[in-house]
Amino acid sequence: MRPGLQALGYAASRVALAALAGVLAGAILGRPWLGMALALAGYLLWHLVMLYRVEWWLQHRSVADPPEARGVWGTVISLIARLHRRKRFHKLRFVQLMRQLQQSTAALPNGVVILNEQREIVWFNRMAARLLGLRPASDLGVRIENLLREPAFGHYLHKGDYANPVVVRRSSPQDSYLSVQLVAYGDGQQLLLAADVSRQMRLEAVRRDFVANASHELRSPLTVIAGYLETLGQDPALDEDFAAPIAEMRRQAARMNSIVRDLLELSRLEETDERAGGEPLDVPALMALLRRDVLARPVHPGEVRVRNDSQAALIGKESEIHSAFANLVDNAAKYTPPEGALEMRWWSDRDGGHFSVTDTGIGIPAEHLPRLTERFYRVDPGRSRATGGSGLGLAIVKHVLQRHGAELEIQSTPGKGSTFTCHFPPERIAAEALSDTP
Image (cartoon, rainbow, N blue to C red; front, side, top):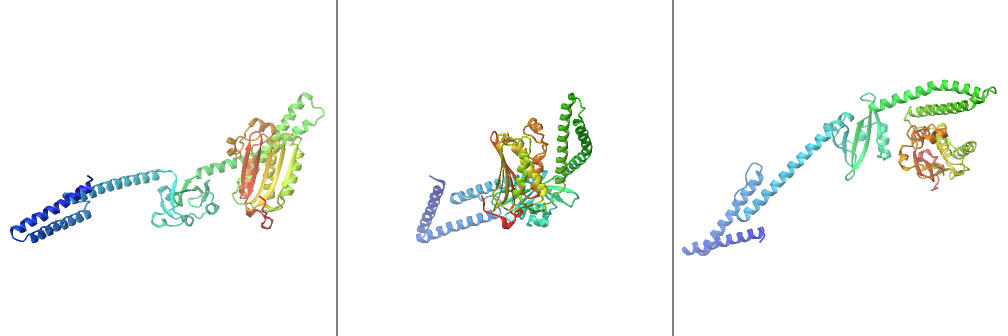
C-alpha cells in the first residue's frame, strides 16, 4: 500500500475509534450521541492544534525543529522537512557555484560584461570595470553604447558582424587600446569581451615605423646600385663571363626595388584607419588598362577576358583602387600558364559593387587561404621568388579594401584555378547606377 493511502486509512481508523469511544462514554451517561459529538469535536480540535504547530514551524523552520506527530500529520511534516532539506542543499550548492563563478571571472585577464537584449548592462567583472571605467552603483542597466562612445565601437555595433573583434582607442588612460568583441548566447543576450592590447598596438606601431624608415633608407642605395648595374650591363666592352651574373644582379635589384616600393605603399596605408574618400571611378576603363598591361608581359595567359556587367561607378581613391586591382590581376597572371585563361569581371547589385579576377592557374590549397593576406606569406616560396613576387600584394589589397569598407573573398581549387572577389558596400556605388545584375 502506498504511504498516502496508508496514512489515510490510519486517519480514518482514528476517527472511527474516537467516535466509538465517544459513543461508549455517552452510553454510560445515557447520552451516546452527545458523547460521539464531543469526541469528534475533541479530535477536530487536535487537528487545529497540529495545523497551528505546523504553520508556526514553517515560519520558523530555520531555527525550530519539526513537531512530533503520527498519522497524516507525521507524513505531511516528514515530506515538508524532506523538501526543505533538498531545497537548502540546492541553495547552498547554487551559492557555492556562484561564488566559484565570481572568483573565476574575477581572475580572468579579460573584461566580461553581460548584456540583455537591449544591450543594457546586467553584470560585469572587476577587469571590465577597470578597462571600461564601469561603476556598479550607476552603470548597471545602462546601454553599453552610452558608456563606450568611441566611433570604432559604434560602427562595429551598426555593422552587426561580430565574428571578429574591433580595436578601440581610448583617451583615458592615454594611448590605451582595447580589443572588444560581442558574443551572442541564450535568448538574445550577449557577452562583451574586452582585452587590453595597448602593448601589442605599440609594438605594431614600432614595427610599422621601422619598416617604413628602413624601406625609405634602402630606396636611395638600391637606385644607385640598379643604375650602375644597368650601365655595366649595357657596356659593349663587358666580358661575356660577367654578362650573366650582372643580368641576375639587375633582376634581383629590380625585385628589391619592388619590395621596397610595396613596403612603402603598405606603410602608407597602415598609417591611418580612416575611411578613404575619392571620386567616381570608371571600372570598365580600368579593367581595359589592366588587360593591356597583362598582354604586354613577356609571358602571359593565352586568353585575357574582360566581362563588364555594369556601368556603375565605384567611389574610391583612384591610386589605391588601381593598386589593389593591379595586384590581384598581376598575381593571377603570374600563376596562370600560357595556355590558361584569365577573366576580370565587374558587376553591381543590391549588395553593392563586385570586382573579381578568375584564373585557370595552379590553385591554392584550402589550408593556405586564411593566411594569404599576411605579409610575405607564400604558398610556394620557390615559385614566388622565380616569378619575382614581393609577397606583399595581397596585404596591400586587404588594407585598400578595409579603407573602402570592402571585403576580399577567395575561392580556389588546386589544379583548376582561383577567384579573388572584392565586395564593395552599396555606399561605394553611385545610387543611380545600381543594377539588379546577379
